[in-house]
Image (cartoon, rainbow, N blue to C red; front, side, top):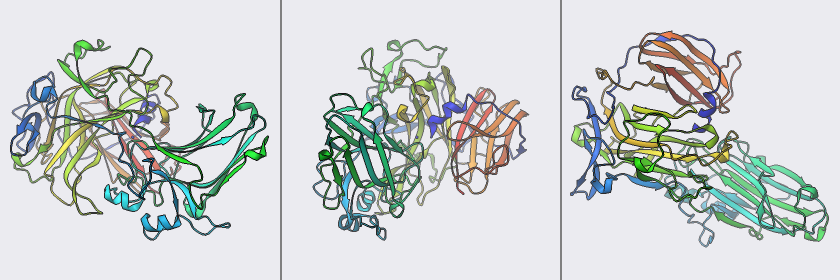
Length: 581
């Protein structure tokens, strides 16, 4: 998920700017205190929530004009919602005989020619020649079977290791030399080189590789010297571990951060025990993995449940709209010293299918809006975040032609302050993205993530029992023209950006629900303020502002991920931007 850096952005200062008006766009009605959908909603806005059993299809489906309260008794109060453990990855299927079920594996030129990306070469000419390697990736045919949007490469939520143990004589330094390339999403996907001393892993890796930094033709050589003073006394064995980890988005799987050859490859690895040279080991990987083993880290578990409010600690701020059961994502079995959100938790709760045929729509929608009640106490130090997704059907797999159900994109990027907060009403919105086919049905998902492994600001991992969700429903809008807002709508600033990704400029449009102070700012991935586009008092309406990819000093920013954050009417919303140079 990029979303974790939103925490840091909230702490930064602001400057000044201007805005230009565009035609007004009014929003769909809000939801407060478990109220029913408002009857005065425009005819082209359709509401879904609550669940019924469809005997013809033998499944739970979303109902019109209802609310998912998780208290109805339907489907044991789950109301058709299901749980996905995002850390439960499919094992590799090729080549036959990979016993470790890991996508970190040994490959060589013949295997790669058979299963790899057609027309590419993982082993371009070098002296001496490289014809074997340990490599972290799906082969092209595997990725096609899984319908990766960019073929060969890595998927989301990956945790894979390659490891080998070497003898250590007890004295002298250790020198490690390896030839590699790295091609990963910068600051979100990593290959770490750890050492383990008699099975105990060091806290800080010897090397960290991240970013789109290379290809087989541009191999790098890395040499590391480990001082004997840093090796625990009495150590007799040192294990080298390449650990690849990917976050929950922007990978070859979803086509947003593409790698032609996969994320990481090591073509040789030399271990030198400078105190006891007889222990030296040179692995060229030409004929096989040479004692390296490959591990797919076991699934973490989802830990999604319905929890009565009576079993939860009182919220730090009043949240009376929460009643009965709420949807939670914490580990109820955790002991007093265990984290409530386990390390690297990736979990999603998915709504039942929301069919569009009963509305008379052809499936080509303008917007999807999600409403509900949320209580969150998510300080930066805990590293626990959430976001919304939707899946739509049918979707044509570009490689097999099959109709599949696929995660399309995030349903809005979430931002929240480092204080307890109760949100009632409109919680997320996304413009529809039309595929090759009309949408028959879609599903809403809520994803919870523990991301301390990628957050330097995370000092107290594991968090608390939040976030909690209740009273969820969805609006689909055939046309945004003439949709009257309810007087008590819980308004958000609303934020869209087109084109995105962009080159050289992007148009950012936002709604000001009520007259008052408005700020629109751009942040980089570290949370540093890049540019203030707007900072003034404005009337209610719909406005637009362009960003040309320059910072406050007029310097061109490099390619990468940035964040646009709009603050208005006491609320905030953030949208991810991707700049391509």
